[in-house]
Image 1 (cartoon, rainbow, N blue to C red):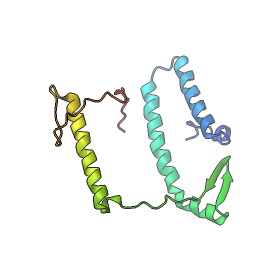
Image 2: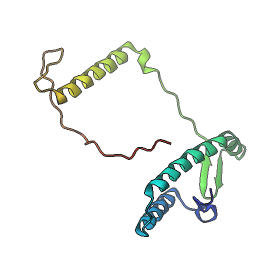
Image 3: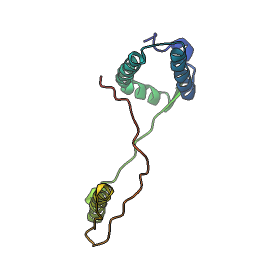
Image 4: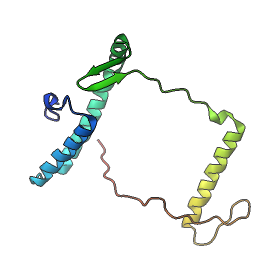
Length: 146
């Protein structure tokens, strides 16, 4: 793990500084002629999975330690506090909400159908369904399966 991040050098960096450093380090490797970017992406994605599970393993003990410290701790420049996710109502139990949600899904289906239709299509109320412009175009992404 120390090959990925030098803990001594990085321990006091902020989140933004870590992101900037990561971007700079990757660009420096490319500029230096590094010829295996797929190798680095694979290693990086695997490190993310490992570190996510690694940190998750300490979650309960870390929450306990923060609670024992009065609800806040500062370690290596990182601030730890306890919070809650909040309550969420079960909106689907309301018949009006459930109907509106269904109507919205139905309308979304009509709009998607109209986008690809050769001829005009009409909704259940006999009104023409408009062909909407794209809000954002499709982008090429790199998929990595570990």
